[in-house]
Length: 154
Image 1 (cartoon, one colour):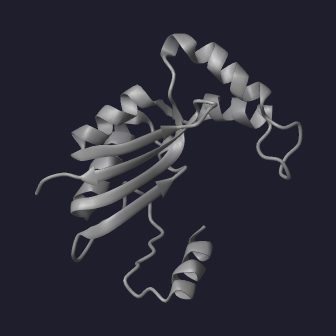
Image 2 (spheres, one colour; image 1 turned 90 degrees about the vertical axis):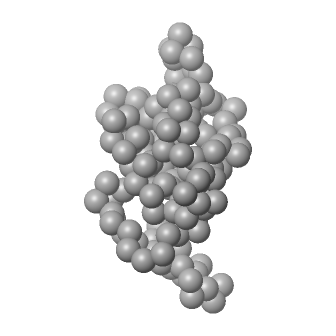
């Protein structure tokens, strides 16, 4: 992903983009606060405790008014709906991978071994980290979400 991004930055002729390969909990920002941060399909690898700390660290790296784009596996259904929603997601999985996406078995493994969270838990983490959620979009499957957030205050 970093190589693809670097190629796009170079092709666009951008000189103000810094691409960093570092874990969200280990990264230490130096210099001026950033205008923009993106995390895609990474937060679900952290338990909620560490997820909340990572969001706070991202907020500290951004200037007030800076933008966070967060894309990840986020469950936008209630706990009581989990069985039905996850089964629908599993059933929609293609039979073969990699040509058509992840398989049912891979989705089931994800639920057992990763730390995707409910939107009703993630969104308070964002606001606690001093982000204003400007837009939240949820997939029809209710297992993916896209949040556009603005870093508040000083």
